[in-house]
Image (cartoon, rainbow, N blue to C red; front, side):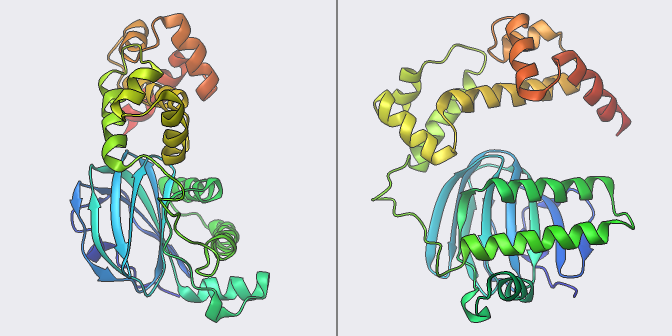
Length: 301
């Protein structure tokens, strides 16, 4: 079944980062999206978006339901077929985003076979700003397929992954079960205050940051800030800062221009010894090993 995907019509400010991969009932597209607005349109197939690189606030409206969320690598969105999407706004670029397109019939078949659900009740909810580990794992596996290119043995693998994805969507995000969180009942950091905090972190990655300083940017006590920041991002402030430091260090290691001690100081680790220890714990390899591996890959491209 060939899908009539809407990527080219919806993502008017973006560009594809790789060739499209398509199998029966499944299409994969990898995009970079610039900041700004996207096209309003009705969706002819179901789309799953998974952010792989970048951080920003995303606002969107589907069938009159408006959502706004802070997105970081791993954040996902579900756009069910038949939804009319409008007012989609990106506060900053999405450096890399994987889009998975599925036909409604795939979801109906999975619902019937695996869960004995009436296809009429298997419609997905308009769910966004998700931190779903299984969706990220499936998306990462699909991203690997795009990176290496198609192989004759992929069909069975893709069929299994597609069925797992469809069953997970139906069981976790059907319109009957999933509801957008009530922001009054479950307070979170609004995008404006969250952006102030994130901007401060980015500006001071090379310096010592305190919880009190971050909380002050959000006009909250450290206790309430920690709780609301974790609800908004899925991470504690300390974990978020450490992940950003590791990500920036990885980018600079891959470029191969700076000494390890310079990267350690510019990313807030304080010393090369501390940098080595934290980096190895986070990635499973030393900074030198990471540089050697990724510098070779970068030069090869």
